Image (cartoon, rainbow, N blue to C red; front, side, top):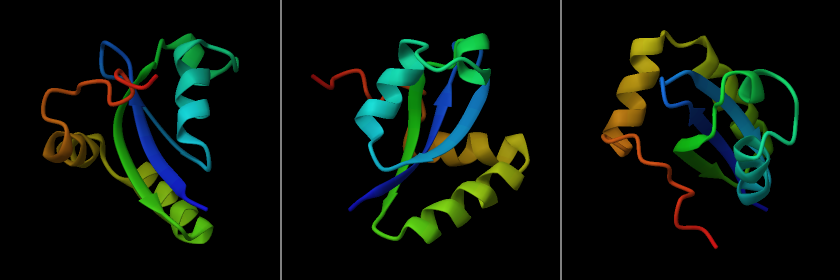
Length: 93
């Protein structure tokens, strides 16, 4: 099974970091505000960064590591993979 560490962003670039085993479902939930909380409140609905691993413990450790980073380091990581901050889930069926 694959696990994903991901970052979602709002139009104003508010960031959210999470981990999931079903990236398609989780992105859909964020985009349609199906789960009340931070992402719904701040309109965090764009998938801007993803890392995949088959090790759930590695995914959880990476999520914690990213959450501890300064914002500037998170932005640099996103922009290294996705300089225009495109929604990576935009073309999913």
